[in-house]
Image (cartoon, rainbow, N blue to C red; front, side, top):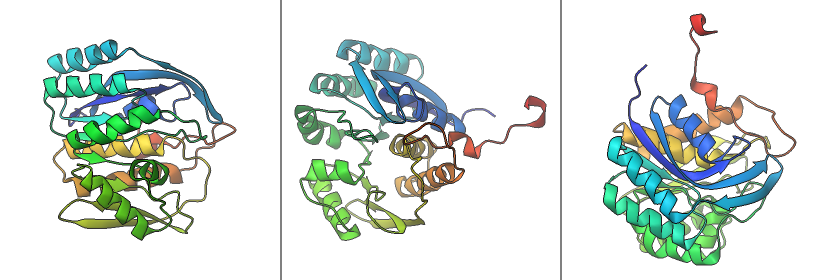
Length: 270
């Protein structure tokens, strides 16, 4: 098949392949689009945690974004791990040069194992500058709590947090409800005109490494192909749940999900 659209991924690398830019590339490819990358950091990690983080220089990140986009113009951009204020400012400057309208921001702050991936100064710049420049922000509950400074323990709290993010300048917000203790997964989508709640049965598994990266890349892919943001969120959530449900059991900690869950290999290639 021919790729349906072109996605530029700005994110950190995950050496174990379950999250980060590796998960992003797999997702975009599995959903039928063409993935390009600007690597912001190289991490040494596995399913049990993060061992080290090595940032790429802001100048090099800008070169990746601008030189790639000059040749192959992205239909949408997905932004993941931005490790410092210098990197955030460099990305903002490059985004203004390449002028792509559809941008999905996954505000990666805490790894699945609990390691903090961003400092407080960077969180401030993200809130003041970056949120306003993107089409959608997709925090999970711990990330939404950091951004809004409120405690979230219910769907109503999620809506309140989403409203605070709109007040900070966000155009659309999807707060992921996986951290709530309930049998049902509930994700909240909000903008100034509509509120939607996506409910799904929670799958009992520890193998959810990279779900946030995967979800935001899936949203970017569907959105780049002309679907509305709300519909893109709905379809991306279904893809992630399907990928979790196929039950990969790799690693000793929080294992990856199955990004290949949508792919059927033709007989002649088996």
